[in-house]
Amino acid sequence: MIYNKVDEGVLVHEQSSEIVPWWSFTKTVIGVLVMRLCDTGKLNLDDNYPGKPFTYRQLLQHTSGLGDYSFLPEYHKAVENNEKPWSIETLFEKVNVDALRFEPGGGWCYSNIGYLLLRQQVERLSDTGLCDLVERLLVKELGLNSAILVNNSKAFSTLYGSKESYDPNWCYHGLIAGKVGDAALFLHYLLNGEILSTDTVAQMLRTLPLKVNVGERPWTQPAIGLGLMCNDDSKLKTAGHTGMGPGSVIAVHHFKQARPQTIAVFSVGQDQAQVENKAVQLATNAC
Image (cartoon, rainbow, N blue to C red; front, side, top):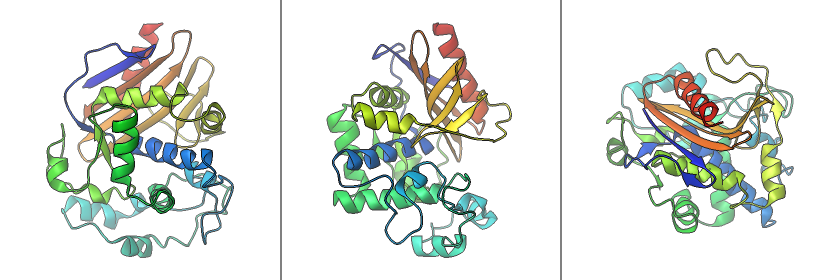
């Protein structure tokens, strides 16, 4: 297990040199890119996605009604068999992407496809690809020099704890990798107001309570923001994201407490509760 925490803007633990997949923490980065377009007036959160019945806000919050490829046994079998990733057209056909699970805004369903659509629109409006956007924001602007967009099996095989045969293009919204400490620093910079305007960060943190069974995970009052998974318990108020993929898990969360902490924990395996509970332990011990 690898972990780092940020205390008042400084990494408390020595930065590990290992480069790890950030998995769904990539969604937080995509969320920031979307919100930057809002800050510059290129996009309005409550406008409908072009040609669709749902808004950008609903996509960010997983309330669009879209389903997901994670529900398809065929998807998991193809990944396990090291098949070539489907084209986006094939993906949409297999998921039946236009058959919404509920009316937009009328429910909640975690959807990787929603973030694929957001990535596509960010790339259109920015007139450049996600790889360049990651380089500009994380590396050049924030100095998080380890951050990269991983887009082929060879690159993925170099990551710590990786399943060598996995093609990261099965992760359709994109897969960012980097040091564990850089993931913590990115979330710290975001919630400290160093990337977006104060009002925009407040929008990201405006939460919708979720009625979901979290099992052994530590969240007592789970909620969803915009690109952020949150816990709205006053005794354990958090914002961040956890991610999981073949071979590993990562949890990156900010703890709003007397002494705020931003903590990232990575582990080989498939236990999201393990890394989240470790993050809570580290935050609690810091008080």
